[in-house]
Structure formats: C-alpha cells, structure tokens
Image 1 (cartoon, one colour):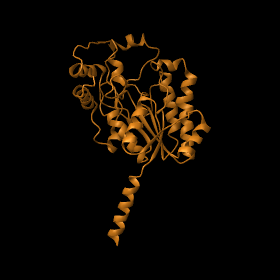
Image 2 (tube, rainbow, N blue to C red; image 1 turned 135 degrees about the vertical axis):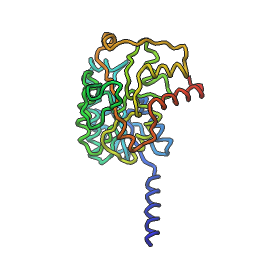
Image 3 (cartoon, helix red, strand yellow; image 1 turned 120 degrees about the horizontal axis):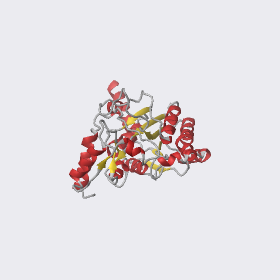
Image 4 (tube, rainbow, N blue to C red; image 1 turned 180 degrees about the horizontal axis):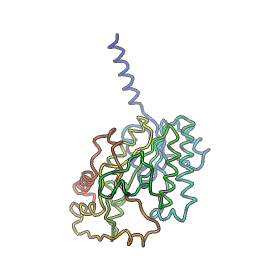
Length: 305
C-alpha cells in the first residue's frame, strides 16, 4: 500500500509539473523579452505578450483577468537611447516605468497571488576597498548597492529596495547582457567603439541564463539574485577573443576613466558580482570566458558572422 501511495504521489507530481502554463510577459517585444518568449514556447507553455503598460493599473488588472496567467515575467524597463545618459534628461519618464510602473505590477501580482519574475540590473555597484578591481571578490546580494552616480542606477536601487518587500517577487540582476547576436547587447556595442575602458566586469550570457529564469519562475523561486555568469572579463579580453575567432583585422584603443568621463554625461558602473547564490541552484552555468569563447565558436562554425 505504501509503495502504491508513493507511486501515485510521484505520478501526479510528474503530471502537475508537465502541465501547460500561461506566462504573461511584459516587455515581450524587447530583445530579452523576445528570447524569453521563445524559451517558454519551446518548452510547450503559452507565452502571452502583454498589451497593457506598466503604469496603467486598471489595464493590467483587465489583462490578468482575461488571460489568467500562472506566472508573470517583466522584462520591460527604460535604459535610454542610445544609452543611460538619456535618463539624466528624462527623469520623469524613467521613474514612471522603472519605479512606479514596476511596483504597480508587483502590487497587482501580489493581489492576485501570482509569482512575478522581474528582470532588473546589476549596474548598482562599483569597485571599492572591500571589492578591489581584479580581486575576484564579487558583490553579493546581501551587500548594499554603492553606485548611484547615474539616474538610471539610482532608480533601480530605489526600486529594488521596495520591490523585495513583496513576498511573491523574484528579482534577477542582469549585467552587460550578450548573446550570439552580435548586433545587440554588450559585444554588439563595444565592437563599434574606437576606444574602450579596459576594466573587468560581470556579464550575463543570455543563452546560458534565460532558460534558468524560466525554470526559476516555474519553481516559484523568490528573492534577489545576481544573474550573471561566474567570473569577470575586461573589454580588451573580450575584444581579443573576438579578433582571435572572428575578426583578426579588428582594432581598438584603450582610454582612461578620465578620458571616458569627458565623452559621457554620467559615470558607469564597473564591478564584479558574485554568482555564488545562483550557482547553488545551477552549478553548470559556465565561467564567463568559457561561455564567450563558445559563443564566438558557434558564430564562426554556423557562419552567423
């Protein structure tokens, strides 16, 4: 009798785990959002692209009641065009989406008892005495952010502080995302820069980590996670690999922080984040250097470049 009961429990658990789930995705038309939609669809679940905007409360409520999602993922947010300097002169718009809108969504999800996965940023730290540049000592989720020099980062710090008060939220801190699509993301940017800052940073390889985001949502994991590959790499290290595998004639120059600050409106976040907490759940997430080499090899072998 006991064996039959155990078997039945296993059977029904398996059936429940394989049920088709409805995901409502905010920011589904963006680069990361599109990738999330693709992963959800490939796994046989329903990915519903949200039509409502984060700041329009009643529209969100109407859409939830219509689509009846099991989970909600938010990848919407303002980073500015062409970069975060835009946020310095568009503070109201940035606040409306990055703080007010996201909190609005979290509050509605809490009312409806729906798990929310929020795609956020890790650009809220900079190297300091306890985390020296090149030391390999990354900032953990428990350490308070220490970088608010840009208005974009400031909004994300304020958001995170309040967002994590909701018990139904998973907050994923993405930093410098990249993928095999070299026309987008971090590598897509720096290959067009004539001069770069040669400083190591944490990075998020979307090919490695976005499947984890969907899995964490299905498992209803909550709390704060640095959503980056383990390790850190400098801009020059990445470009040297780019030259080795894809573009041997590529050239670039390095310049100092002082020189960079003359051509940007506000300072940038440079830091290594600890991936230890994430690795406890997903120990096979590759080191950033191994992952970038793998990306360049895939591009070369599949002639995507």
